[in-house]
Amino acid sequence: NREIRSKLRASGFELVYHKHVFPGFDGAVRRFGFFGKFVQRIFFWLEKTPLHFLGISHIIIAEKL
Image (cartoon, rainbow, N blue to C red):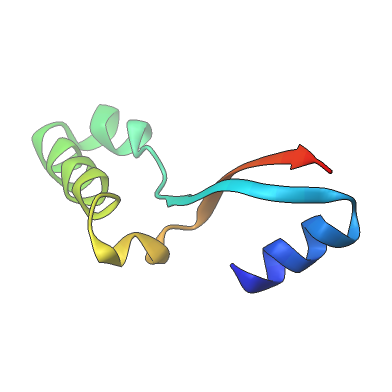
């Protein structure tokens, strides 16, 4: 988070919102049915816990200074 903030600031932006997210696992749901849906729900639940930092993607909202 600190590195993202410093890079944004160096580019003239201020971090407004930052969240980690997990993949959607849509392919796993189609391929594995119930088990894929189960895995998807576990990871969606993890996004709402303190373990969210394990997510591999970032949602970032920044505003120009």
